[in-house]
Length: 471
Image (tube, rainbow, N blue to C red; front, side, top):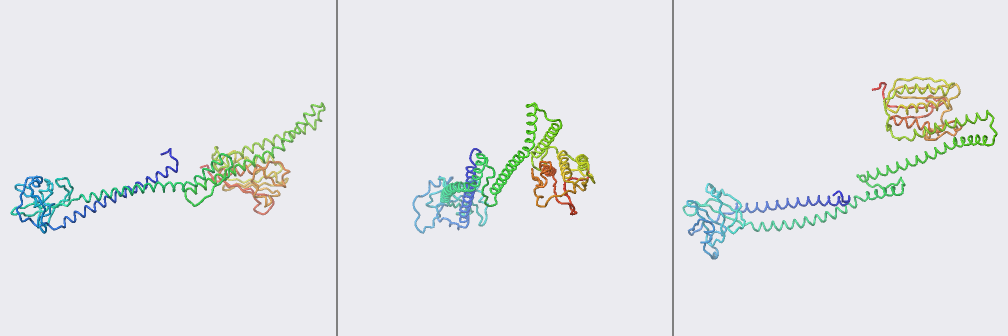
């Protein structure tokens, strides 16, 4: 079964289910008809009037076969009061079998039939039996008197016509069942083809993507059943893959653009030093010192940029990092403030922190807080104030710089995005992107906007789940 195609399995299973249903229905119909026919025969036999006793003396023999052998032959005259030929008598003391005139059949007597001598009134016994020639019958046994002795009157109705009818009914039901199964197989094939058409489209789309690597291909969705849900999920996956490839392509292009500037500057300075040594005209010490300082600064910029790219290359999925632990956010904020003071020696830091513990990557969260503080230091005026608050899991960093134009707020967390007014300042445009990614990995959220009091500067807000205790 597993080697069959899905369409073949659906066709087989649907045909098998219909076949079982038809077979069960046919069997139930046959048994119901059988019970009704035999019940009708038994009812008619039980309600039929008893035949009148014969006027002539009945001769009794030991067995039905012997009685039938000595029976007179011939045809009963019209309007004769002879008992029907499917009737016989059983007498006791001694036991004997008596047939009415012109009888051509005799009923096989069972030992249990002797219980009929204990019947009274209109009581009777009805059972299945056979004639001596093997013909199946239904027998009615009642107590009567023939002459001076009590006897059992056995009246039989042949059931061969019923069995013939049941046999014909079985053939008819079998033919109908076979036809129904064949029709079910054809219908199952059509249903399987119609039901699996979206799956064929999905398979075609997957094969197209595998062959051409053109992610973003979608298929039409009809209805809201399981196939439609599968198609919707595939479309979502394909769109997500396309967006991921687009972000990857954009990241590579932006990274190449950002790397080009420091690399060009490094190559220019190195070429200048090499040319100076090759021509035998050494550079003045001051110029050489300046060149080496510029080269060191460019190397540091490259190091920071590469580190930022490695940080952003991690999976962009919340709580996907391998180093999630209980992190003391207030301690991270304290260490970050101390490092920020070294980068902005002329600035004033107002710090208020309360204990707060969260689950996350300690190194990633510390880098996120440092990036926020570096951003505040970069845009703060000389002697300005930077306010750092941590209360109830909400970390805020407020500077008093020029702030962010409202039309640029939607881009601040994009990779490599830099405000046109600040492109002359150092930086790669990856700091806030790293902040957003690290906070999302810890299950929090970060926003950046104008100060709440309407004053100058920008306000960064980080909300992280957790509690005031490590538990």
